[in-house]
Length: 209
Ligand SMILES: CC(C)(COP(=O)(O)OP(=O)(O)OC[C@H]1O[C@@H](n2cnc3c(N)ncnc32)[C@H](O)[C@@H]1OP(=O)(O)O)[C@@H](O)C(=O)NCCC(=O)NCCS
Image (cartoon, rainbow, N blue to C red; front, side):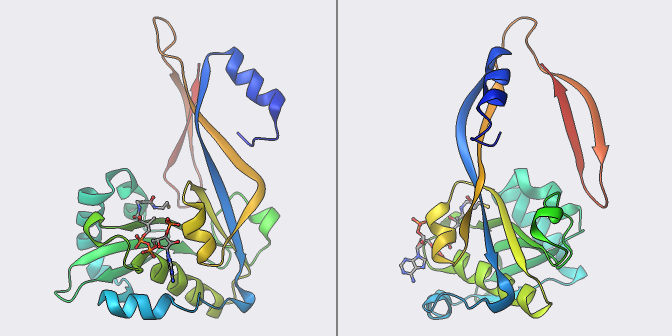
C-alpha cells in the first residue's frame, strides 16, 4: 500500500488488516552508472568471484536458496531472469542476486520506460555478511545492465535503505509501502479467490478477507 493513499489504508484497516512494516522501492539511472569507489576493493578483500550463471549452475543456486533464503527459491526456479553469484575460494556459492533487463518484466515499465531493468533477491550467506559482497553484487549487476543499454533500474520491496543508497540507488517516492496481514480469528481467515500468471512469471495470488 503506497503510504500516500491514506483512504486505501483506512479501507483495509476497516476490514481487519494490520500494518506491520514498511518497505521501500529504489531506482538508479544506469545510463551513466559508476559503482561506489570502494566496492571493488572490499570485494577483492572478501576473496569472492562474481559471475553470471550458466545453466549448469542452477542446481547449486537452488540448493543455496533453499538453505539460505527459502522464500526466494521460487523466483530463482522461474528462470526468467538472469542470476549473478558470488563464490568463495572453494567455488561454493555464498551470495546470489536476480536481475532483468533492459525491457524488464515489471509492472512499473510504463513508469520507468522501455529500457527499465530490475534487481532483486540480493542475498548473502549469513556467515559472509558485512564484507562488501552484497554491494559488489549490486554494483556488478548494475554494470552489466548499463552495458546492455538499461535506463532506470528498480529495486522493490526492501527494508535495507542504507545498504542500497551507498550502492548509488535512491528511494523512489511515493512507493514507500506499508505491508500488513489480515486479522486472524474465527471467520476471518483470508480466502484465496484467484490467481494470474503473467509473462514468464510465478503465480500471483489474490485474497478475499
Ligand atoms: C542486505 C545484504 C544483501 C547485504 O549484504 P552484505 O554483503 O552484508 O553487504 P555489504 O557488506 O556490501 O554492506 C554491508 C554494510 O556495509 C556498508 N558498506 C558498504 N560499503 C561500504 C563502504 N565502502 N564503507 C563503509 N560501509 C560500507 C553498507 O552500507 C551496509 O551497511 P547497512 O546495511 O547497515 O547500511 C545481506 O545482509 C543479506 O543478504 N541480507 C538478508 C537478505 C536481504 O535482506 N536482502 C536485501 C533485500 S532484497
